[in-house]
Length: 233
Image (cartoon, rainbow, N blue to C red; front, side):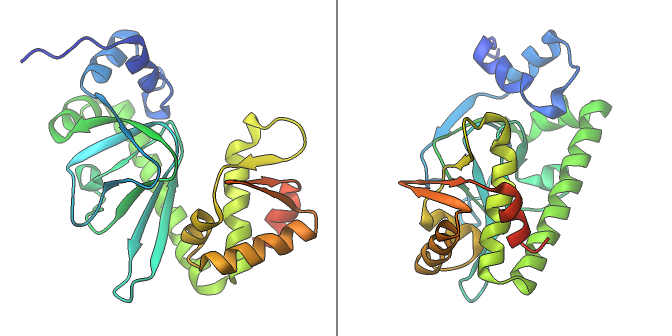
């Protein structure tokens, strides 16, 4: 069966992804045609242990939280995925993810690639395969950091660390004073392994000290350096 031709919007999805840097337009068109777009609402699961997938997602818009749940029911966030990177059933790439959940933090748009096309277009190209290995290496380092934080850091430190990471990602798009991070208190609690009430209390204390400003569904980090220091890194 012939594939539909890639549109300009599809190709944008490829052009904004680091692993496809320096590919020709024809190469990106071929990959884009093999990776149709799909949308998810905030809070929706892209995959879970109960609904496993054998696909690779290329995140075009929004943010995705990867987490796992312990036998006691405690959720541990293992990665925060920002636009322009890949995630999914990494067993395709040598990293098993079958016990993980992927949750859309915002309205999310992804390009979806099948197992066969991952091998055909990605793993067969040494340039792309090497960059994917680098991404997986960084993600493993992030997982180790998060596991360490969960054991050794207090809740305020974990909240500060999460806000510091997200503020750095948003820095280039910030306007005026401060860096705006679009997250609810409930989402921050989920990201840091605490209750909503505790997250609200900690955020309120940081706001009283002038480190951030709270708004409906958002937190504006007024002093990124101070928040980073609060994280204890």
